[in-house]
Length: 281
Image (cartoon, rainbow, N blue to C red):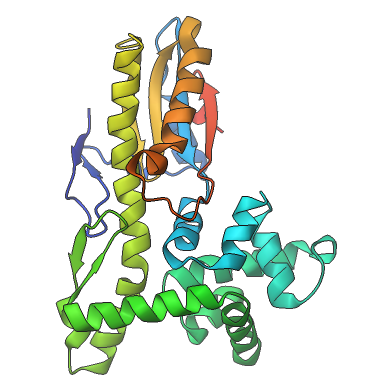
């Protein structure tokens, strides 16, 4: 039975200790064998609910970038759509390699990655990385403005804010030492996005519990684990369809409940069901 600490990370996410169940590997054979040891009781299954591409969706909401919002509104593959814009080709001509590059760029940009770091992540030349970097910001000017505004706000006030108003201080952003200041700026860029994702999953925990209680589904459906943007419940088999539908609707509507989702970017939840933790694909 792990301990979960509300203030366990600088982003506002939970951390887990004794043992750290948020850090069990999913790709290695050893990690998967560990996951196989977590088995639902007889008559129950494990249900995982995961916010899909939540940080990129929040980047669209926070920045108000019309191109990125349109990609999500249209239900397009965000990485293929970004690749199409950055590389200047139609989506049907996007190769797996181009999509992989776009995925690296998408997450790299919102984590404050510069040209050199992008070059290393892509495994390309600096000139090519710079072309991708500039191409991204030209096609998504709302993101460009948003990231610059976040840095300027943090430099002026010494903190950043999530969509829900939770603050994270950045005293080093005013450091006279350039590399320390640059490091603080990189963290500040992503802080509102990661922090809002942390707020969102905690609100989902609350709203899910209230929804289950209202429908008299407790304790036959109970939360057993939270990992980043994912919640795992233990659910009696006979109520699984009802619980799954209820929790998807609740989690996808959390931002609407708070009336702060002005851009109406669809928030989507993917699910997995299985007898063991390893089965939750």
